[in-house]
Amino acid sequence: MKKFEELNENNSTIVEVNGVEYRTVQDPYVGDDGDEYHATALDINNNEYLITWEVVHPETTDESEACDWKNPDEVRAL
Image 1 (cartoon, rainbow, N blue to C red):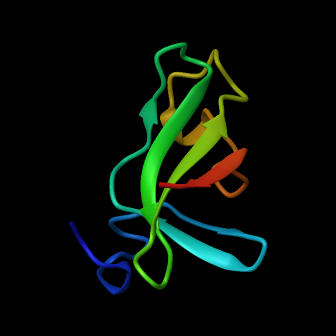
Image 2: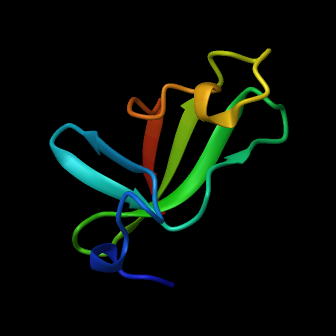
């Protein structure tokens, strides 16, 4: 698995929540119900988290517009 410092805007979705930066280690994927996207991410100390985004534009075929990628619904430690 990549380390936090190896992840950037070219290979990761980067979000900041409550002053903490998280960088995804995988592309966000659609959840089983189709209402959310999920991705595993790291903080600066390489702690793992699961980030969840709500689908806000279910009718779009462009995944870049499906969610508010800068504002996840949940960041949960793994």
